[in-house]
Image (cartoon, rainbow, N blue to C red; front, side, top):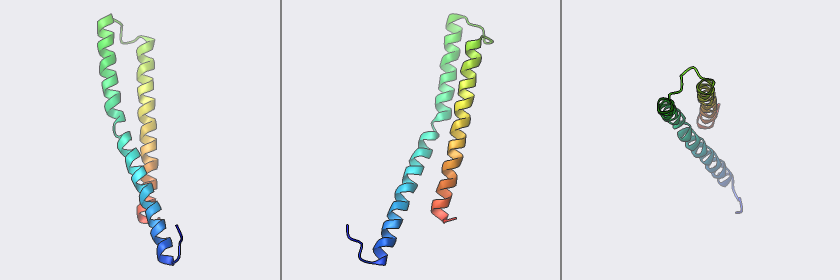
Length: 93
């Protein structure tokens, strides 16, 4: 692709910016599923606990809840970073 004018350069820059925005929006959409998966995981784990009559204060349960909390926190931090990048791309700040 030969770039012959300033308008083509500007168009190429805008195209790259739009691709980045689409990629960020796709990642944000994926991160929106994390709380749903965590909720389903907790519900399934509770069914497993009830089925095998395990106490809720077992170390396995506490570890599982800790992993869920850390994964939700990580997803929220990632979502915040992506929103910041998206804002910078859209509003050039």
